[in-house]
Image 1 (cartoon, one colour):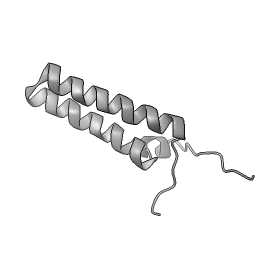
Image 2 (cartoon, one colour):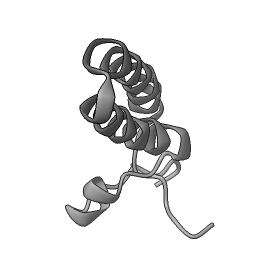
Image 3 (cartoon, helix red, strand yellow):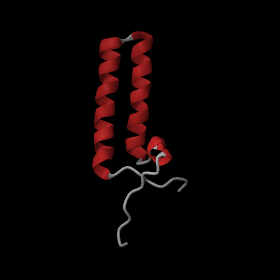
Image 4 (cartoon, helix red, strand yellow):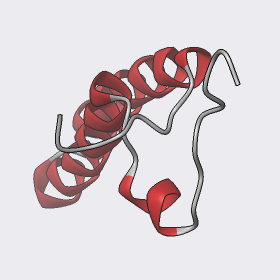
Length: 69
C-alpha cells in the first residue's frame, strides 16, 4: 500500500454516513453550482472514510495505535 490508515473504524463509518447525508442535502437544498461544490466536498469526506486515510490527519501526525505493541 502507498498509505498507512490513520482513521479508526468507527470514524470511517461516521465519515461515510455524514458525507452521504451532506452531499444529498447539498444537492437537494442548494442546487446549482453551490450545491455541486458542497456535494463534491462531501465526496472527499466519503472517500477518506472509504480508504481509511485522511491527508489532513497525516499532516498533523495522527496515527492509529498498532496492535501487539
